[in-house]
Length: 386
Image (cartoon, rainbow, N blue to C red; front, top):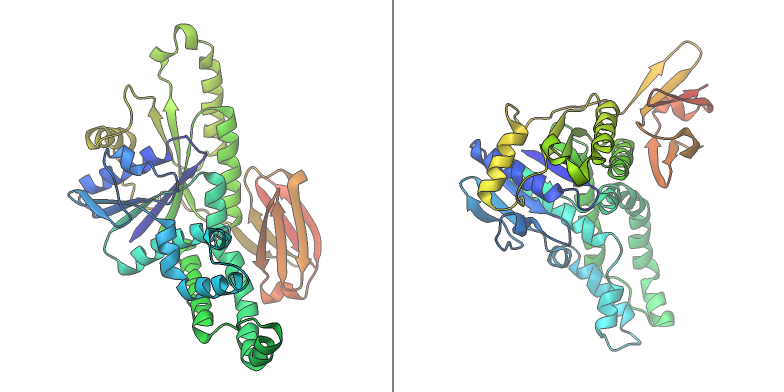
């Protein structure tokens, strides 16, 4: 089963690209599900019909749904949420304020990702197309499993053991209920799912991310940052979609001054993503909605291309063993060396790009060595160890 995620800045046309891709794949005879993880759902608008939280058949081989993150979260952490609610309502009346306090940042996005994992593990479809939330939310969603799973892995065994030993004393002295085993079971269940999710998302034969942009300078910069951050977390971006390209015939009169700006933007896209397949769509005369329009756009965009295949894959980092040193090469396209932060803490390497930080577990051969130098060359950060 293939999973293809569309991401990019808000308003660039991710939903339209995802919907057109799904229609194109369904027309080729493959069973495809397209779904939206964006809380501001508009996937149903693209198909001109209301969608629910479970897959609905729209045409032969084509199914669609819009994820209800509240519903998914209730299914995923019932016992844990119940315990937190019990703690919060000891001195209160259990009103709406408690429910609001139990909405933890990032969890709703995580449970949306769990839905992707569930669909993949059931294997009912040949292709899953995901219309993601705007860039910032998508990045939070993609890095959540790695960050949270590491924390839980270290803390959970200690907490479960501590609760059994000290639980009766704490309950008596502090007048606070200690968590039952089913609460820890919920945490372990979530942790195990996160491990499977992370393994799936890093499987480059199964999962591809595709960035949607427009030729405007500010949107291109966002696409480049997005590309860098996704590489930082070792996700495979295998295509760039350039939407709303103004045809020459539309550049007359009032829009004449846009010709040079668009040409500059298209040139920057070609130079920046030279190795990555690029798909271009001209600004259409009508809205990208309804099945016939999406079918026509899919045919125009993907003529001669099987978009279910992995279109591009690049090694993110590798190690060169030399006589006097070992060099870890990390691919970070578009990163500014002034924004890079590098630290070695124990067996881990902390690499930051602006406000994004990634922890790399160092191989055994490097764990006893120290960083001697780091140099940024042609998109690669070369880190030398001695």
